[in-house]
Length: 312
Image (tube, one colour):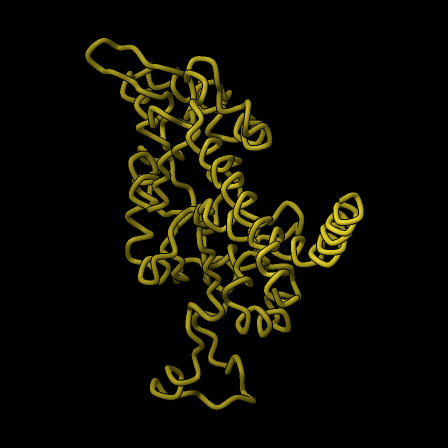
C-alpha cells in the first residue's frame, strides 16, 4: 500500500469513531430532559438580568412609592393592576405575581424550557398594551417608519436607556444611528450650553398624564412650544438669527438633510448550532491525528511482522 493511502486509511479509522461519538454526545445533550418548571426559576440562569429587572420600573411596578401614592389618591382602581401586576384577572380580582414579571412579556412558557427558548415579542405593540400614549406618538415618528421599536433604545429589563449608564449622556445612544447629525450638533450653540437630543426631541407632553403615564413626547418632533421655552423673546425679533447664512430653499434643505437612519445598527439573533458542525470538526481533528500517527503505526506493524518471521 502506498504511504499516502495508508495515511488516509488510518486517518479515516480515527475520524469516523470520533465523529460518531461527538454527534451522539451533542444529540444526547440537546434532547436532555430539563427539570420541571417549578424547580427552575428564571433567576437560576439569568442572574444579571433578574437583578437589573428587580431594580427597574418593571420589577417595582406594584410596590414603588410613586405608584402606591398615585393609586391611593385615585381610590385604588382595580384596572391599574392590569399593568402593574402579572396575570391580573378582573373577574376574580386576583393576579399571578406583583410587578411586570418575565411571563408578562415572555409567554406562553414552553413546556420544555430551557431546551426551547422563551418567546420574545420585540415589537412596539407589546409595550403599547400598557404604554398607550407613547405607542400612539411613536406610530407617527420616523423611528416607526424604519421599524425602530421601543427595545432598540430601552432596556426592557432594567427599564433605562441602553448604554447611557456607562456614557453618562443620553445623546450617545442617539449618535449610534445619527452619527453625522451628532457630529454636527457637537459644534452647535445648543451643545455648548449643555443641551442634548432629548431636550428638544423628547420634550414634555402638553396634555395631562393619561393611563400610560407618558411624560415625554415620543413622536421625536420638535414643537414650537419647545423652541419658545428658550427663545420666546426672539419670536418677533426683527433681526436675522443667522445673517451670515443664506436662507435654504425647501428643495436644497431636503437634499442636504441626512437620513434619520444613517448608520442604523441591526443586530441579528444568533441561530442554534447544529451537531453536524461539531461532528465535522471532530472528524477533521481525528483525520489529522490519524495521518500524523500513520508512519509510526506502520513502523510498529512492520517491526511486529519481522519479529514474527524471526520466531519461525
